[in-house]
Image 1 (spheres, protein in one colour):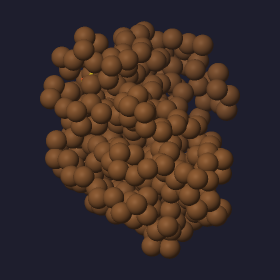
Image 2 (cartoon, rainbow, N blue to C red):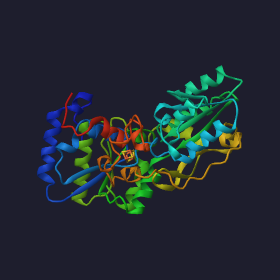
Image 3 (cartoon, rainbow, N blue to C red):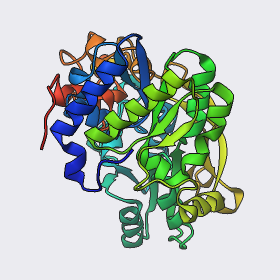
Image 4 (cartoon, rainbow, N blue to C red):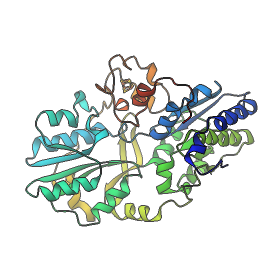
Length: 371
Ligand code: SF4
């Protein structure tokens, strides 16, 4: 289903409301719950007030689509321990990771305030530049993100970075966590809206095993409001017809096999490993660790630092572990807005612009807007 190729077409209020009307007419008899797994989708849904125009019997919840939110505090503590125990280390991190609270609400920003050398970068290339300019220091980059950012990390490591450069890989991958969530039965959704950016890299075929295993309808969606509404209609039609397949609403960008070059780079540099997701636990084969031939860039090995074990990964009162499974809304957390704000986040979902709580804080409850 396609309505055009221009961004403005996908934000056309009239088209959106017409399609919502069709949905209301055709799917009023049952209740439906669908989950997306992308912070940008949550931004689209909330910013454009889509939940307000959809009928009450159709619920769209946010899953674990914000990589910063699900980065386990063990990885954050590891980086902090590195700063505390080793001299001459510069830690580079993306801005949305900088203030994510770890244990006892420690963060990279607190480390910076204590005098440790932490620098915010916009890309891993900036970290390489810092390493070249500071060859008397060790630069450790905190590499975070899903399949969208992992190819840049891989590409950088394949281009002979300076010897004083290494990474802590906190990269995670999306299909294994969907497998984990669907197997748990906890999320109880009738279909998934799959992430457009991640799918651009891994391709639509990467989710086929989920369709086979769980018989769950899945639609890859773009990021404009009409993309999301079309994807919802496609899911609803699958449910109605008893179909359980992968469809691609975002055909203008996502291809069946994804970005072959990016996947090749990732496969060269990374191996899959079991990884802990904050609020979810250990998810089989969902992490990306460096292959042995890239060990010299692995800060954990290079500096012989042990991964600290943290069993309590969410602080008391914070409901992020439910928020990332679509089991609680930010507004249902008693700390939301009163105690927990983007200026003083108590949980990881309130920090990143992709975090469900941060998005709810930013936009509140809005009616449908058109640009
Ligand atoms: S509002 Fe804050 S404390 Fe509550 S779930 Fe969200 S991040 Fe956690």
